[in-house]
Every structure is written in C-alpha cells, then in structure tokens.
Image (cartoon, rainbow, N blue to C red; front, side, top):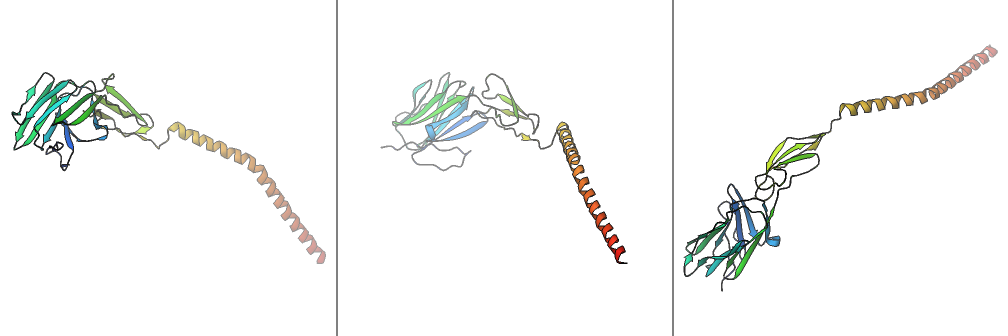
Length: 250
C-alpha cells in the first residue's frame, strides 16, 4: 500500500516537507513561484501568453508507476518499476524523469503559450494531485489618483507593460510595470493627494475672508458707536451733576 506522493521543494525555497501533501513548483525562465497542494480550490493564476511553463515534482514514496495528464495532454506514463524513467517530448509538452536511489524527479513543461484555462495532474499508483491554472490578463492598479496606460492596450498578457502616472492634484513618481507570469504587475504606483492649495483656491479664500470682515464691520460699527455715545453721555451727566452739587454746598 503506497502513501500519497510527496513532492520536494527545490533549493530556492526552504520550506519543510509535509506528509500527505504534494508540492508543485511552477516555473518559467527568470521567474519562480511555489504552489503547495492542497490549496483552496487547487488553483493558481497564470498570465495569458506565458510560455515554457514548467511544473516540477519530486516523488519519494517509491511508487510502481506515475504519469502526467492534463489539458491537451493525454495520460503519459513517465515511470514504472519495471522500466524505470521514460522521458518524452511532443510539439506541445516535454516530460523529463530521473531516478536517484528511489527518489523520482520529474518535470512537465508546456512548450506553447497558454491562452486558456489549463488543468494538470500528477498520478502515482492511483493517487492524483491536480492543479488548475486560471489563464488571465494582468489588470492595472487603478487606485485613487492613478492613471494607467497599457502596451498593448487590447490584451495585457505576460510581458505587457503598464505606464503609471498620477492625476492632477496627486503627487507620486511615474512607474513602468511589467506583467508577470502569475498575472500580476511587478510594481504598483503610489499617488498621494496633494495637501497644498492652488493659487485660485488661495485667492478665493482670501476674497471670502475680506468679504466676511467687511460685513462684520458694517454691522458692528453702528452698534459700537451707539454704545460708546451712550456711555459718554452718561459719564458727562454724572460728572455735571457732581459739579453742580458741589457748587451748591460751597
């Protein structure tokens, strides 16, 4: 009775081996991403037009037979205990296999560009581990104040570029981002809304303040003058009365 095959990480990653799990490594020249199965829905994103996509596996459970199968690929046996490894190649796929002291290393490479969703499975002694690759375009980051222009403009697949800039009223640095094989851009723009006011806004605030001050002065002057006159009249009356009373007693 054979257990579930385990796939080993390459030297690029230092993750531990896990029992009853398969590790698939999806690679393309110049890029490397690791996918550990099972994942939610056992799927990953791949950019439209990605070529030479490679899936590598290491099987350590000494199976009697193993095969790859998937979209556009019928079940292709690459290992049996009787004949050992059997590498093969077609115009669309390339399968390699090596056996080192019972440890089987195998790769499946998609030689043509991916333009639609693709499924791939590794089967060893009836145990199947699958991966669904969702093929999609890269979508530019359209955050607040961000202006994005892609090249090409119709479909932004692997290698497509996006030119980011900031809209008026926002500060930031222009960025050129490239669509990666996982259908994400390698850079993101940062546009921060400017806190400074435009000359027109400043002029408007100054004019508004002057109008408000003029209105206040217009209404307060008569009131203040009336109070001042009343106080002055009272002081004069009191002063006159005092002088008059003093004169009477002398």
